[in-house]
Length: 77
Image (cartoon, rainbow, N blue to C red; front, side, top):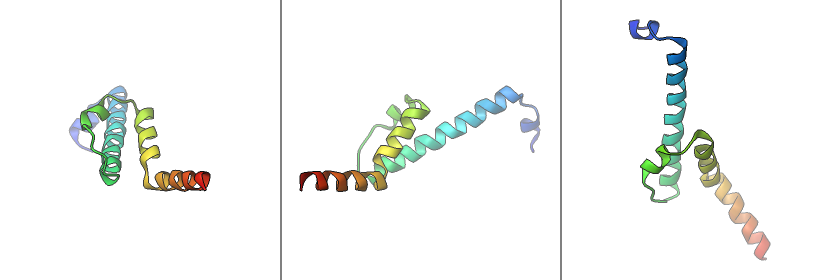
């Protein structure tokens, strides 16, 4: 553990952990949209809360898109 890490308070540590989680969600959402070939201004993602980011990731995941496609095809047949 570095000296900087030893000198932060528990509250500061919690803030850093939350920022890391949020950054990971933003990166995952960007990658999900990129893989789905959906263009999007990444700045929009920075304005969303964690719940909204998770919702976007789940909705646009390839697995979920395939399931929705199959459901729609079955419904129309």
